[in-house]
Picture 1 (cartoon, rainbow, N blue to C red):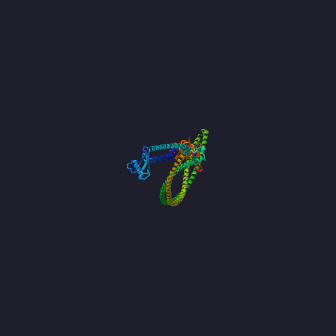
Picture 2: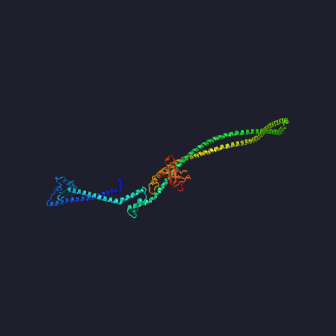
Picture 3: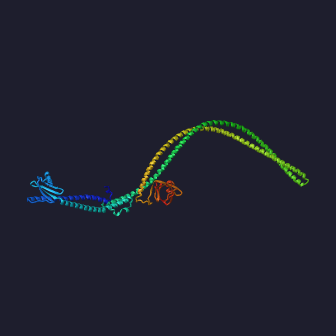
Amino acid sequence: MNRIHELPLAKMFSIIILSIAFIVSTAIQSVKYYQSKSILDENLDSKAQVILEFAKSAEQGKHYSVNSNTAIYNVIDPASKKLTALERQIVDEMVDKKRKTLRKKSDTHYIRADFSNDGKIEYVALGLDKYETALKNLVISSVILWIINISILLTMINFLFKRLIVNRINEIVEIIGKVSSGNFIDREIFDTSRLNRESKNELDKIYVSLHEMVQSLKPVIQDVIQNSKEVVFESLYGYGKVQDNVSLIKKQNNYVAASNNSIDTIMEMSNALDNRLHELLEKSDKSVYAVQEGLRVVNTNMQSSEAVMESMEQTLALVEELKVFAHDISLTLSKISDIANETNLISLNAAIEASRAGEHGRGFAVVAEKIRQLADISLENAGQINGIIGSIRKNIDSVSQSAGKTNEIIQKLGESSEVLRNNFTVIDSVIQDTGSTLKSFSQDFEVQEGFLQSVRKDLQEMDHSSFVLNENSGVVEKSISSITQLSAHLQNLSDKFDVIVDKRQSVRKLIVPPITVDVTNGKHTICCYVYDISEGGISLVVTKKDPQFVCKTGVVYTIRAKNNERHLDGRKIEMVYLFNKKDESTMRVGAKFV
């Protein structure tokens, strides 16, 4: 029965109608056969009855006898013991069952028997040869007539059903096939001249209803296609963002772990520093004692420096007297030098005059030469003495300067000692304050350690939350991945519809999960997600993170891919269309390879 449903409609209905016709025709022919057979039986019985009646009339006239291959007439006595098997059977049937008339068929005869007035049985046994021949002919004619009726009926039904129903149903099936394959174009699937909305024919109504259904489905399919693209985009983009979140969560976990390590290190350093503070407190106590001892020494030094300053003042006074004495000597030597110069000049003039006097002036010239020599010697000695006096003055000046500097140094030393004493006093105060501060620091470190313990606990809670968030993100990632695959399948299904024509005119492959690439114009680079690819181009999701990077149609850009997408690295693309919503921070881009 299931295989019949899989047959073409014409064959299926032909088989069904043939079965019905077979049953009906068989029933009709059976009725006719049994009616004809009943007539034959009635004729056979009538013939036997005629023979019996005729025999009775002949017996009254003492004249009748029949015994042939087709009929046997005889009168039997039920009490007789010389009976044939047929006669014995007749007697048994009529006597035992107390029948007045017997009608019975044996294998070879039709028997009709009646009781006569004298108690005997008259019977006629008619041969069945002609009866069976007539019956056989009746069966053959009925079968032939049944076959002819079935053939004519089947041929007419098949012809009319195929012409009036099957062809139109095949047309409707073809329309349904086109619609199921995504063809919703009216001029390709419907003959609008055959849209008869007033027709009462069911097939016409189906044709009109199918046209109305296609018209109703077209905007729905368009909306489904558009929404499927939106779902694909959102799921793919969401998948990328979930992966980014997972990456950020992993980084956060690393940061939390690093923070825990840092806190452990800080706490160790705090403990070490606290120990160091205790040591510093002990040393500060020792420093207070050392400062006080130093202050005592400074006071002693100040007293000594005051005595030194008095001695230096006396030395400076003596040095000043030496400077005055050296100055007086210098003045005397200057006068001697002047006299020597004048003497030298006089001797020179005398030599000139002596030369003019000739022989008379020769002795005078010798005297003048000696005077000049003595003047030169005096001048030279005065110069040497002046040099010595200059050296003495320089030494005196040096001593004076040294003494002055020493005095200044001693004064400064006194002042420095005073300052040092003040500083020691301040240091003593500072060390005492430092000790108090160190004690406060120690207390603060204890408070800080409590805060760090609280921060560590919060970080542990954050780490647990990050772990749970990471697991939840994994679940969300799997869910979005499943949604993405389903939406990709939905997109592939929607691509089969002819309502919207793919501009690339090529089979595209949806990429799950999307590929992360960089797109550059030579100066600036921006991150993109590739979510479908074909031989002619790709579809991108551009994140608007670089305001200096502007996407424009007709401009050629270069793809910079990661290690896993080396087949895209260096490919040139040209933007074909750009689309973004006002409330979105991303842009959808269609690009072709160039």
